[in-house]
Length: 419
Image 1: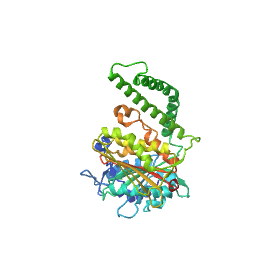
Image 2: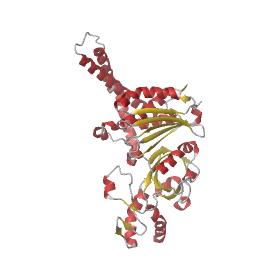
Image 3: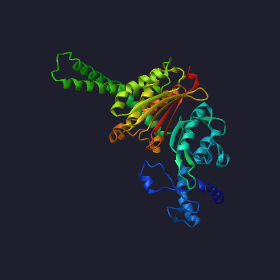
Image 4: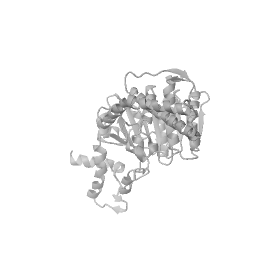
C-alpha cells in the first residue's frame, strides 16, 4: 500500500481506533472495558508519546488486530440521543463480506444497512444497549453492496474511546458461513456425541428409573427404613432429569436436519407460561427467587409448536434461576410491537454475562471443562436449542446483559404466528 495513502487512512481513524490494551484488562476476562483510551496527543496512562513514530507504534497493535481478524467488525458512534448510530470505522473483513469500502460507509447510519422485520424487532435492543452501555447479541439481516442479504448474528459491546464514551464495537458473524471451521468441527463432535446417547445412555437410565420405582412403591415388600424410600425418590428424580436432558439433546440434533417438522397448534401464551412457572417454582422457592409475569391484556393466541416453545421458555427460566442470587427476581413479560409481532422477555437481576461470554452464547463451540469448574454453567445446549426453535418459527432471539446487572433474553415471534 502507498505510504502516503496509509498515513491518510490512519489520520482519519486515529480518533476512532487508537487504543492500548492494559495488562489488567488482559488478566481480567470480566472487565467491561476491553480497551484503554488514549488522547489525541499520544498520552497513554500518563506517559507522553511526543513523536509521530511512537504514536503510530502503539496504534499499530490495535490496527493490525482490527484489520487482520477473519471476523467483520465495525465501530459505531451515537453522540445525539434520538438519532440512529453512525458507522465510524470498519475492518478489512467487513469490506470483504459486504463489498463496502471505508470511504463509502463512513458516517452512514447503521440502520441504513439493517433490513426487514427482524431488524425492526431488534431495533429497541440496539437502542437500549446503547443507552445503558451494555452488551447484546441478536440476529439481524444485513444488506451488502450488491443488494444481497446476509444472515448475521451481531454482537454489540461498549468501546471506551478517548472522548465521550459514545462508541461501540459491533462484531458480525454469518450464521451460515461455511468458512467457520472451528464451529463446524464443534457441531460435528456434538452430532457424534448425541448419536451415541440414544442407546448407550437411555438404556441404563430406563433401568435406573424402573428399579427406583419398584423401591419407591415397595412392590417387593416394605423397605423398613423410610430414609431408603426418600433416597429412591431422589434417584428417580435425578434419572428423570437426566433423561429429559438427553431427549432435549437428541432433539437439538434433529433440529439441524431437513426432516424436522413443527407440531403446530393454536394455544394461549398465558396458559403456556403458567405451566412453565409451575415447573420452575420449586427451585425458585429454594433459592428465594421471586417469579412474576406481565402479559399484555389483549395478547392473542399463538400458532406454533407448543411443546417445543414451552421447552425453550423453560430453558430460559432454568438458566435465570441458576444465575439469580437469593432474593432476586425473574420477570416474564409479553407485548406486541407496532407491526403486530410478539415479544416475550425473560428478565433477571442476576450476575449477568461478561461480553466475552455473551459473544459465544449461540455458538456450538462449548468448553466442557467449564462444567467441572462451575457446575451451574451447564453444557451449552440451552441457548442454542432456544435459538433454533424460535428460528424454526420464523423468529429471532436477542440477549442484553452486563456483569452484575442481570440478563434479558427476548424471543421475537412474527405477526403471522399470532392469531
